[in-house]
Structure formats: C-alpha cells, structure tokens
Image 1 (cartoon, helix red, strand yellow):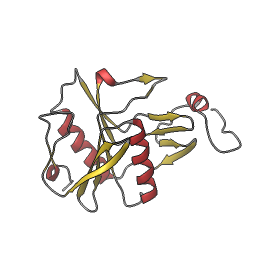
Image 2 (cartoon, one colour):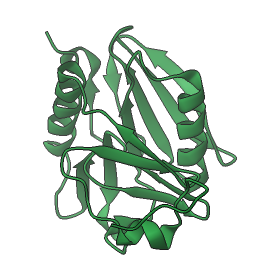
Image 3 (tube, helix red, strand yellow):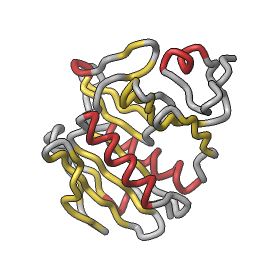
Image 4 (tube, helix red, strand yellow):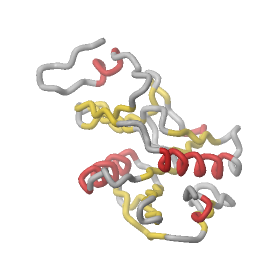
Length: 185
C-alpha cells in the first residue's frame, strides 16, 4: 500500500497505487482521504428505490445508472474524488481513465443523513458544479423532502424543494419518479 506523504494528503498518482478497500467507502477531498461508514438501512433503501425507478425507464444501451460503488474524479490537483449515491450517465459522454470516472453524470443523486454538515453540503455542491453536473437531486429522509439543483454559470443552484409529486430529470424526457414511492415504509 502506498504510504501517505507527511502532509497527510495524497496525490492522484499515489492514490492510483493504493489497493481498493472492500468494506469501506472513501472519498478524497483536496488530497485528504475521508473514510465513511457504510450507509444506514433507510439510506440504502432510498438509493435502491431510486435505482430501480430510473433503471426501469432508461435504455441500458444508451444510459448507465450507477450506485455509489465507484469513484468520480472531480479534479486531479489537488485530488478530489467523490462517491455519489447514484449517478446517471449517457454512455456517449462517459470517460473512464485509470479505472475511475472522469466525466460529469447527467443526473447525480445524494441521500443526506443527519450527520452530514452544511460545510460538507457546500463542498459537494461546489465539486459537482465544477465538474459540470447539470442536475442534482438531494434527498433528506428525516425531512422527507427533495431539493432539486440545476447548473447555472458553473454552480449548482437550488431550483425547488419538493415533499411530494413527480421528479422529471431534464436530460431524460419521459422519465418520472414519484417521490412518495422513494421513502421506505
């Protein structure tokens, strides 16, 4: 395993030499490795409901719906790589390099937990905006609402907050996700 420099940060090249960790999720933010605990059950169910709803409506020859088991490189210097809960990519725009994804998904979804801070939220929104993610949905299970963001002038801006109704991603006409069917019973 590559050892970390004395500064406690890792470069892209060092990160590529590190082994994959089986039972842990890690993100790298500005070179700092952040180990995250596994998702709680309610979180996992929401992601699964979203995955099923989207996958059933999209053509697998044109689109991939990926859950949080891959690294999405935001930038190489300083290294920042995120692990979104769910991302929808048009295959024609997907860029894989060194085993990681280096392109913006057309739709990105995060499920927020009470332990997440406002600072983390701001960091993620800035990172995803800088990558050019055109649309993001942020689910808040405790409040049972969804915040919808669209890319404007290089930043993700909140467009609406919904507690019910149908979500319709801009890039995928005809796809509909009923918010009431996402929350676990």
